[in-house]
Image (cartoon, rainbow, N blue to C red):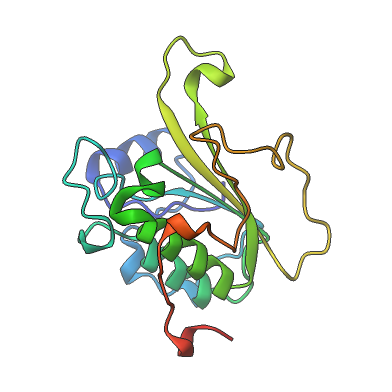
Length: 183
């Protein structure tokens, strides 16, 4: 772990206790990402409230939809991460008719990433409950040695949806990225 970007005070305190020498950059919207130490692997979760069954399921219309801020941060990094791993709730795939997931896919593709996603139940990895999460694994195009992930070519466990990026299924919405963002 080279750094964190966590603005919640309680979560930041936990990170500080567990990783006392690791810098926390705080709010991702306030960081000068061009001056942050490059990393090969970027791992993160973004707020689930816009997609969660427990929330209002506003998707991109929710102010807590922070994936655009994550994509903006990656675009400002001097060296893009080789691999990105993101986690969220399965509602990301279905809320707002899939428009939010389509936006995630298109933003990653515009940054030069291709990958897969999969919904994994906690029980799939030995836990005694079914808490499901969607994991998105994307590799940057500048890396020739795309890592092999066990089972990455298999259908997603949730609803049998195929997991190939950057071509979302038709049911994943019509998000049309601004032409200026696509190179």
